[in-house]
Image 1: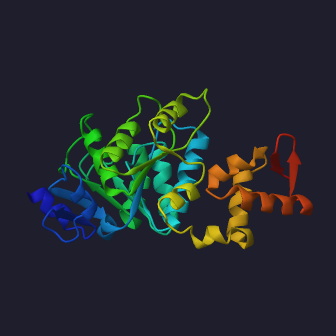
Image 2: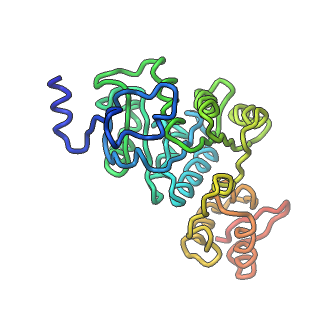
Image 3: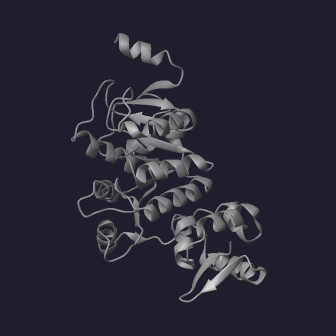
Length: 294
């Protein structure tokens, strides 16, 4: 009890119970809401509209870019990004959520006084400052395999829907997707190469009825949420220009890949690329690909 008292001396730390008004109302709708939640950071985010973004710990660079860009767009559109603070896709999703307007919530499978994995220590500190980290496990609880499936039901339980970015067939992300489906939430998945093991989990979900997501706008339209102002005015925005150019880089890239990277519609990207080709800023290549001119 003394350890908890000392932990609560930090104004950023909170314990929220079922009897509290700031207990996340979304969790009251799941079968087994935790009676106590330990929180660090902005506790008001627990009742903000949110969306889960999850995926492989061993993600590809493209998968990481997708997770961060989709999460950023969804965050700017008013959805707090929920994920599990794991390496790979989870970490990228948190970074995207923090960069957007609605921040991010990390749901962990240890006590809140333990950062796991340790490589995410800096990200955990950023979440504690600008977002929120929560756990149903008491302080001092170490990372145990059985904790993480329990953690996953809270990720899906908090969210209006769940996006799986990359996942092998055996991925724990598919557990989160299954729980989201059981809770009546919309499940989305990003397709990938038929040769990639990290696409097989997403393809399996799509075969089972998950919604295919090529852009973040697909998700917003399905949830009947307005596209953020920054996106809707992307053709005239310096911010949008910088995002497209940064995503394009100096390696050949097609419009569909650019769209998936930044969550912007292909028609808007095509208009920008046509304008820049005329200006000599990009070069059109065979196969519908483009690259920046150095």
